[in-house]
Image (tube, rainbow, N blue to C red; front, side, top):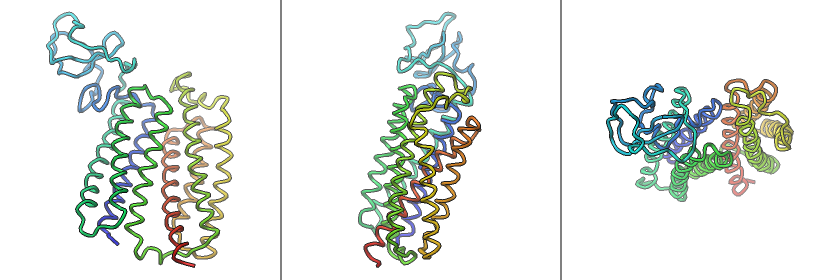
Length: 344
């Protein structure tokens, strides 16, 4: 068992989950367009703290690439310029990727922190890449998984730009989230391969338990996809009624919502049965307690969002809980599948 490698993989997994958390806070607060450009924010490395910084003013120096709001539109400085008494549009290019031209300091800095979490994860992945590339005690299969995960992170970064440029198109946000889950899956597989030696002696094989794990993982994946469809519906309602009128977000919901809600009951029952089997036969899967807890937490936050009009924080923890459930179940499936090969 390569302890140092496992530690670095764990840190990388945590960094991806932090991105999930930061992204969910952005969605919860409606801060997705807090920075209307990418990778900078209003053309700044460190975003503005007041609208005054974005308002055109005479006799002021503007650096090349910075963005201002003028006549309810965004303009980008073509070169470093010092303004005169009149606005000269020949010095500026209209920002054409979208028409959103508002500034809210809280939204801007919420989105900025989200981007910083991605930058932090990028450095974590670079350290992990170095480890798997130059480690003397290489473990077969780990390096390719880490390389693909890193490529996934680069793709996710590019997709983040597309999300902003497309003015938060719902299906692109959905692809963005699924991509994050795939990265977690690759890292968990790498962790499993690095941990296999000596790990399996802590567990017992059980055919029914293994089958239920596969079923639970399949169902929670379906639930997450259904959840993204529900979220797309909510996004459309928010655009229709406004972010401050979230009580209308699930007005006359579609079939996906009702299926998503009812399917939760089935998954909770399977989780409870997994817990019972693990306890009865002493299978050693301590993660089942977390599975059951997260399932009930998912259901509870779902109820709050529907019946209490999205209390603050519920969207974020609901999304994060689903991602954690996916990771825990996937890792348990890896372990159980290997047990079926080597233990009777």
